[in-house]
Length: 532
Image 1 (spheres, one colour):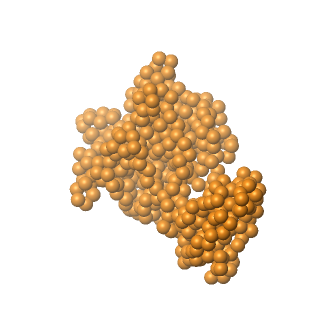
Image 2 (image 1 turned 60 degrees about the vertical axis):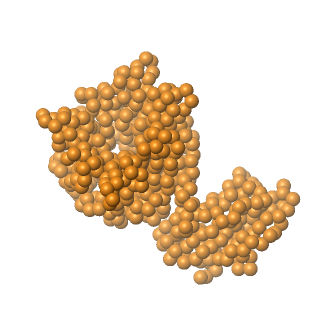
């Protein structure tokens, strides 16, 4: 390996094996008893024009002005997590905010807008992201608006149509067949209606899937998890004609195929986003209801990936969301919930392989951790996606079922192989093993500000005691790179290229610090792996 290749590999390295180290950025707690804050979460795009993505949270059972269960939607700045706006339901029992979708510029003013379902009212509404005025309203029977989605421009008027469902809509026979309707953005007229089979609860899940059949018109996926004695079904239907383009049924009684749906990134490299489908109680070999999530190829529905849960009857796949490319392999990954029989869980799963990139388990009994999940995009402009996990039934002191939403940064961190000291400098590299085409990021924090620093890089491990600390990379075979921290003691190298291995690299930062007796601050050491 040439000197230049070794230098790049050292500075631009990432770990294998890696540490699943998503960073908890904070939580947002509901403000009142019984609010169910976090029942729905959606990214909404950059509403406040600060260059970062924002998000909205539904508290569908919120009570205000004496209106019990009227519901509330709170829009938050992604960058600061400050409240940008509050929208309140105006009908008791309206459950305003039980369903949300965002990020689509409905009125074509250059600002993304917000779609809200209020099934207790039978209402579907679109609010302006610019001033939160009402742009669209469709009123129907109670139950409509249980799920909502911006469906894309179906009728060619340049604006997205609106899809909404009523999973408990009754048919002539069979009870809750469920229905989905597609509304014109122009006048609210119904363009298509789809009905489920007896007791199927069609519309329990909805997802816009883009142009599935290649006819130039966006299409729609819908789940019916109680189809055929809870085997479940997922269908993709044509936005242009309403025809069914694809159907897949669960194989076993109780699988509940179609429990959740999400359009994710391109998993198979054909340039088209693919579809994640949850079957929350699917039977695994051994006859355990572990649940499962599949990735289906856009256009054909062929299975690209299958991942099963781990907790019997835990509901793995109850909620799924696109999360972006967490492992930097160029393919879309998936956020999956497993609300569980006890502590709920959420997972970040590789859309390509099904490997677990992160697991979060919250010790909150049966309070619904993972009831809702949402990829938020990059809300803090650090180059990595963030995600949210909702637990609408958590009970902070004095507020039963107020609900909580937790926000994480979705990163995968290499191993820290030796602690820092003296000093507090933290050296981190985020990303999976760097194959060709992958990237990672290097961050230094808590270092002395505006100070000269030396990155020590070697392919060999050592422990040389020096100036009150330890130098971990072998000095006799090392490269020293002269760097400098900024005014806040930070240093970063982003979009690190892969494909420079195979090699194992050790690196450590030593920074000048006159405040220490020895005059030097030693970071922790990092072990990094390269693949070809």
